[in-house]
Image (spheres, rainbow over the protein chains, first blue to last red):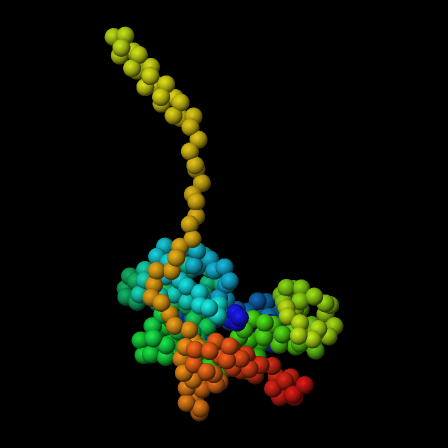
Length: 208
Length: 85
């Protein structure tokens, strides 16, 4: 059973913002809303600068879902956290609950009127007819229903951002880290790559 | 007078004892249930035309859709995609 996840390789991200641009373009995200952002730490410090691309992480136990007073969130069978904009009241609880700052609120007017929440959909649209105009206008493209992966991950030039079934992308990442011999410290070897030590060959068919 | 005093004493006793009661102080969290419109699954759609689609799968067959999407995900693995190792 697939469980869709993103995984970011801080050793590879070059802060090009290609993922941000791809997302904006693919989903025609309005002004003031960034479903995906690139966060850089130690900016300008030689050897210590690291960047990662951050969006909704489609948590398995999503705090946004827990705090929503109108229960507009749901999780699809393939593990993507989505919401119904027809129900959302734009209260902002999800924004405070989310550790990644994923929920975004379009603002318009002189008084900063806050609109309905908008966030990364893993390019899976929302509760409208798949691949319909209504779905595109409210939630953006439904690439999963087209047999494609999120545009941000597919556009990433260095393949720092991986998207897809958690088992598949973790395997890709593990093999990459084993080949280059570093990078495991970012997420923790046991958590991200399964049992074994850095530098060891992954077990055949092993899952992380 | 005596009845009033007795009534006041009973009332006071009731309030006094009531203050000693232990009522539940912790809010019991109840998991909400999705209230919105139902959504369809990606594998319930027919694949797009060959030149547009990401992968090929059989409509309503989850397994074939997952195989197609996982195959596409492996395109992110340059060691396999480019060097075929």
